[in-house]
Length: 255
Ligand code: NAD
Image 1: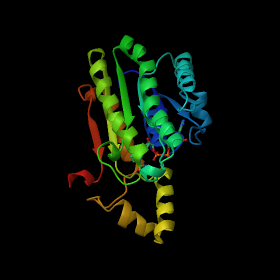
Image 2 (image 1 turned 30 degrees about the horizontal axis):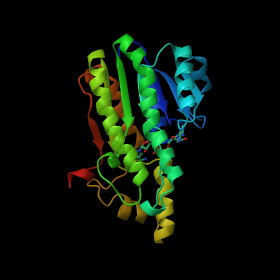
Image 3 (image 1 turned 60 degrees about the vertical axis):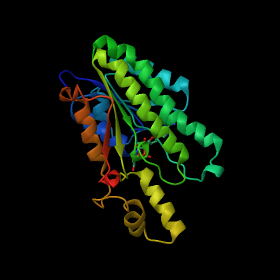
């Protein structure tokens, strides 16, 4: 990245988003964290340097998404890098899947990425430079049982990414989707704990026998591995990489 960029990362108070925010901050970006919760890792120094900003945001609400972009533009002038990362999981069979949860999953994980992309597009077009990275999942490509809302939203994100890539291409804007399998974050740790209780197994047994069953490497992915991919996709060397899915799955989908 040649000159300092402004990077907006949603869902960056925790897990993968937090690691992405720290990585891009260390690479010299102005970093904006949009989340329901305030991050605990951005130091006073970062705020004082005016290189970091937390904007309380509920991505399930259109007006909150709109206000977020207005605030970032007011503080930093533009959004150069948008990482649509926020997400959550809900596990239940189709016939019990609450409609309200389905709606919220699509709002946070598909509609918000669409809205934010729409709001940052004019500024990126003007600058003839932009990077949009959508956090998909291995569940953007394959399904697992009892995750209909998550899987539908994550598959939809691939379509949004491809459309964004086509429309952004002539203006130096790239759009890609990253598709990780299980990454060691609070989101997954909660699922492991719940499964351990249901199945009467230890946390280690659930991790190896359930979560890593389809993994060739047999290892959980670390958030830093995903952040490194984001960093590369944001670089000038990646300017021709667009409209693609970047799978980080320890060999899950090789079978
Ligand atoms: P996480 O739970 O650690 O972090 C998710 C963040 O999103 C939280 O800080 C949460 O507050 C925020 N968030 C949720 N709803 C929000 C809303 N309405 N408005 C604003 N912020 C909201 O989870 P994570 O594992 O770091 O997941 C990050 C992304 O990566 C998600 O999109 C997830 O689907 C995806 N992903 C995770 C894994 C994994 O194994 N952890 C694998 C593939 C994809």
